[in-house]
Amino acid sequence: MTQSIADPANVSQTNGEPITKRILLLKPRGFCAGVVRAIDIVQIALDTFGAPIYVRKEIVHNSYVVNDLAQKGAIFVSELDEVPAGARVIYSAHGVSPAVRERAKERGLKVIDATCPLVTKVHIEAIKFAKQGYSLVLVGHRDHEEVEGTQGEAPGVTQVVSTVEEVAALVVPDPNKVAYLTQTTLSLDEARYMIGALKKKFPNIVGPHAQDICYATENRQTAVKNVAHGADLVLVVGSRNSSNSNRLVEVSQNIGTHSYLIDKAEDIKPDWLEGVNTVAITAGASAPEILVQEVMVYLQSKGYGTVEEVEVMPENVRFGLPPEIVQAIAEAPPLPAGL
Image 1 (cartoon, rainbow, N blue to C red):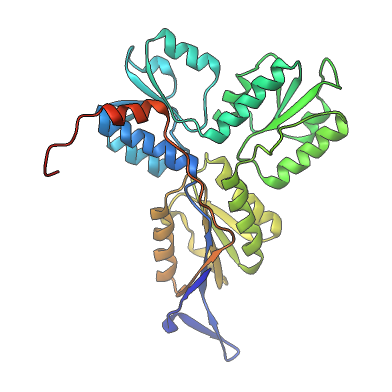
Image 2 (cartoon, rainbow, N blue to C red; image 1 turned 60 degrees about the vertical axis):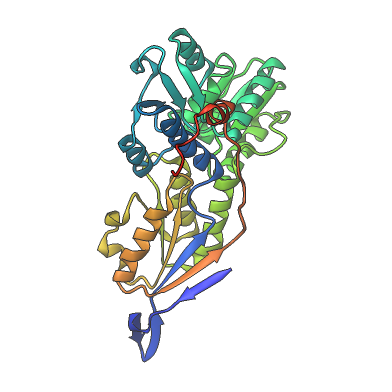
């Protein structure tokens, strides 16, 4: 579905021909099901138990979301030792290692797990392959929380690789007993390239039955691939530490279209728009729609009067809440009459 909204006042002329400055608004964009679930978990916990609610790491990698929840009473900590003994803590959508879970038990913390179900899927695969005696190769960015959590499921047999050079340098006990997994937010092309290198080095390597890259990462990248060639500029709304947002920028740049990652409309530099008639806007899976709308308002103030929403594919995934939250809702006292 494509919708167009045109403002005749925002049409320039070149060689006598009108040129309309336009915005291509990509869909799907923004929040994925795992992010919606994680944010809902924090909000419901605050509503049910009251502030403060502690959250290990950023619940999702977006500064606007984190700041908004912090204002409502969420306290974000780097490690569990910062949480008072016996307090309630939420694990972020990126997941945690068994060592973190054990530490929570030692300190008597009340845990609510907001790990994305698709990240949990990768954890389960890691456990399965390790139990079957495989050496594990995890394709991803080793400083990312998701990778740290997955590697922690089988640290003794898991090696993380980010480049083909690292693949070439891999040494394993049995080259015929190797399995691979990937971070859920990688570039599709990057993952394909890395898996190809692994298969070349280890011809008998095995992998998951279904790819680990999540549906939202794939869909947003596919949308960029379908639209970027028809744009002069691609703006990706997302925070600097958002892996999937950074990958969207790379996808656009690999196509040859200028692209920038922005946290908010104020990050746009006027010189980016020089000679640009068509701007495509998308958002990473942890970026809220309000930031996209603010970018649109800014661009419209700069003369981009036509907005076309380009839906590349529908997206209707939903994830259920964890049992701790479902039980808390069920046990919560009813609201006073009239509220």
